[in-house]
Amino acid sequence: MARLRIGSRGSQLALWQANHIRKLLEQHGHEVEIEMIKTTGDRITDVALANVGTKGMFIKEIEEALATEHIDLAVHSLKDLPTEIAPEFEIAAIPKRDDPHDVFCSRRYNSISGLPQGARVGTSSLRRQAQLKTLRQDLEVHALRGNVDTRLRKLESGEYDAIILAAAGLHRLGKRELVQQVLPAEIMCPAAGQGALAVEIRRGDSDTRHLVSFVDDSAARAMTACERALLNKLGGGCQVPIGALAELRRDCLHLQAVVASPDGTKLLREARDGSDAVELGNCVGEALLRRGGEAILQEVYGRSAVVPQQP
Image (cartoon, rainbow, N blue to C red; front, side, top):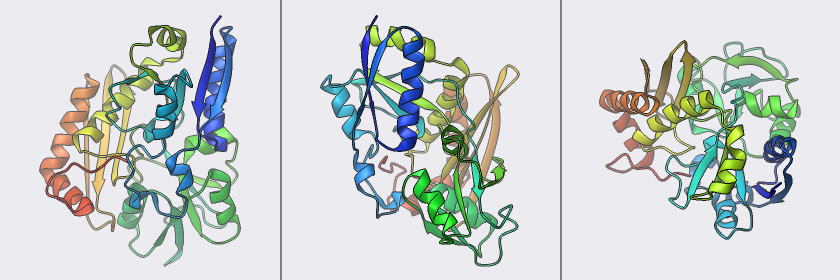
């Protein structure tokens, strides 16, 4: 059986994800080890993610290790991957997806609507900030960096009245004690690819592709392909005020998406059904651009074309 080396960031959540894939591979008889790799995103901890312009900030060093054959495959949160990955790599597998929604966490309040005037809410995401401000202009939204434990500790200490996190990360780490509300996409449309993992390999490495093929989930691949097609159409990376959630409904894909200004004063929402994932993502993306999404994104990135750099 094969001996495989997985590259991963060193955070608790990233290692959970890498170990999840490791266990699946070991169940198939393979010998697996994990290489921890520190990325640019891990080094820059005192700046809001939306203000960091480094492309692929959570994957650059891992892809370098993959390119030089220091590792055989990488495990990422799919939402950290740019919509167009470098030509020398490919996504060999997208495992079954975890809950893609965001969650509202608080010690004292049970919902966004239940927060008092001027409450302090922490989030690292421009997308979440924009949708929060759309719902509640009175809220004070503050940048929140750090791993899941750090963010929850800041909430416990009273630094924030509430924080917004991804449901999947809390579920994987077994840290759901402070979850008060799972936010439906109609309130907080999640990031494209949220809750999904990506197994990345060198393009053309047919041996590794074959070894990990059993991990690939066709439903997860279809849903995330749809969301990433929309994101690509809008020119967005993982830190943009764009939300997208595709769901399989019977034999059809249903995609809902939002584009919002960071201050929450403008929010566009679009939802459509389709059978072709990429075509549906492109179609909804086009509709949002026509309705004013391009102008919103031009404001965010301060340029004349919707071609923001992908972090």
